[in-house]
Image 1 (cartoon, rainbow over the protein chains, first blue to last red):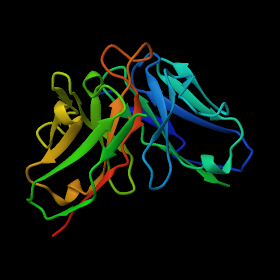
Image 2: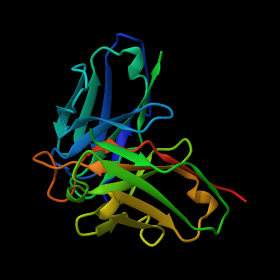
Image 3: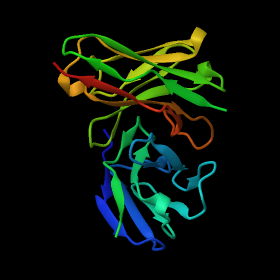
Length: 106
Length: 125
């Protein structure tokens, strides 16, 4: 099983600042990596797939990078609606989520 | 518009059986894998399994193999998740999600582009 490890567990950021979230895979997943956003009481929403392609309707302030085992989600200037939990997920070999990073208001 | 609409919240006792549903619309239901994700209270997301409604090919995560049954009725574009004997530890939110298709998918799986609204299952004596 591929283990996905996200860091940090919690990220405290002020509105307007940049947020950088990391995701590491226990073995290479190529570029078969997605990021999801989940707000309280809501279903997850797809943000990024193919490690760096924004899903339909996702603002340009969200960007993804990386390949192999190291991935990053960057939110360039945090808006109030971006405070949420973010999950990475590999789909190279079955399906595995990371444990999530909570982005909270500093 | 693609939509996945799940059945409503359930409250059950340990040992009871349960079947929850996820109805797809706005796309060719038989042409996309659809799966189930568990989220226990205050915890993260876990894939349980997936099914291809076109031929009922079903795959389970090792942790859930033998614990639940995933099925689909393509005549009514609905996927199901069922338990034969619930436990208190099955208390969770359950989401269905469609797996995408196309060039950004791997040879074996894909990201989830659409999600249901979730079904809360509470198991308590």
